[in-house]
Amino acid sequence: MVRETDVLVVGSGPAGLAAALAAARAGAEVSLVERFGCFGGNITAVGVEGMAWYRREQTVEANGLGREFEVRAREFGVAVPETQSDSYEIDAEGFKFVADRLVEEAGVCPMLHRLVVAPVMDGDVVRGVITESKAGREAVLARRVIDATGDADIAHRAGAATHVTPREDMLAASVMFHLSGVDKVAFLAGVRDDPQTYADWSAGDWEIETDGKEDALFSPYLRKPFQSAMRDGVIPANLTTLGGTWGAVHDTGELTYMNVVHLPGVDGTDADDLTRGEMDGRRQAMHAIAALRRYTRGCEQVRLRNFGMTIGIRDTRKIDAAYNLTEDDVRGQARFDDSIGIYPEFIDGYGVLVIPTTGRYYHVPYRCMLPRGVRNLLVPGRPSGGDRIAHASTRNMSCCAVQGQGAGIAAAVSLHTDTDLADVDISAVQRELARQGVRYE
Image 1 (cartoon, rainbow, N blue to C red):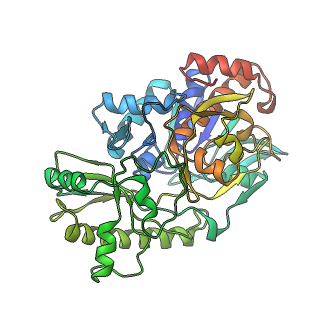
Image 2 (cartoon, rainbow, N blue to C red; image 1 turned 180 degrees about the vertical axis):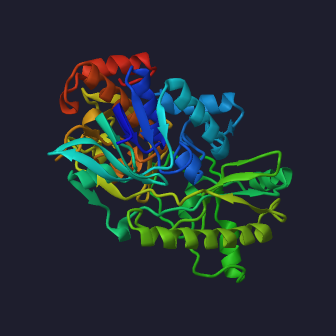
Image 3 (cartoon, helix red, strand yellow; image 1 turned 135 degrees about the vertical axis):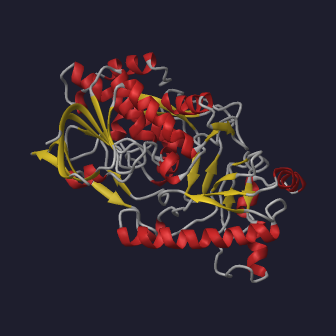
């Protein structure tokens, strides 16, 4: 046993990082376990640099740590205005340093390079975790545990009720990459001459259902270069899933946050699937680069700068929670007494795209993070309880941060009041949320 702590957070993506910081700021002793050598999860390890690409003038948000990630990145000079929204694109490499500073400032104990392999159980109560690392097998015990693995790994192995989307229905995985050697002036001239909108997402092989209000909005969408390359035999004709968005083009000639490789049928809880996805994703990315060189103005000399450290997973295991969000909730501005934050009416997944341009939002309930079947555990982020369309909203990184901050505060409040996580005083949680700058009503 290497450590005992008040709150143990496993996983440091937007949900886990927010949970750890929030719990520490609420007065708890916190340890943050992460399998990679940096904090940030999808932002840093995968390279998803757009936390809030949905944000428009009328968007209403919880703010809190999700917004703080953007603000601090901008202050450190590692964020630029996002192309299609009123948000900032966070540099994946720079945010590794920003996350380090946030962790240090909050007094969180950092525990990198540790893969959690099992929970420590006392009956149905989660008491800690077992990790494997270069140091061998270690145990970390805690008074409260937060599973921010993204795949409900702790909850599942502890015996909580979970389910996995069938492989054939899973949202596609992505291998993110970044480019250099772009002629910015020529590239942006090409974008101006042929501007793409959200309606163009459905013009190819994809079928996207919108509310209609999204259709005329600008989208940094790339599809035509890949269609032309397939037609002319420059790339294989079966790469019909190539297509997506670019993030920002820089004065230095970098074109970042290339989200154009989509890999259906990759189960993020299956190591063989992950292996196949990583390798196939890199292969497809190189084909995409060849197409961009041939058919995209300003990309004639483009070259690969880097891949994300790991494949990006959108859809795996989810908990059966004390309350499971529904499509009606996220579309119908649901209100809950146990709200731990609000989230705009943003849906992105399973063939549905809704951009929050009208000020509509819903409450995120605390109960959707409480797994059935085990105690002393919260599961914020992508695996929280909900149906398919609810998941297409809550899986997004900014909502993961909302849930993570709520989970961290709830863990700290439950310790201060000596109550079970299932019985925590929500009003006390909400007061601390407000103190930390979170809107929950």
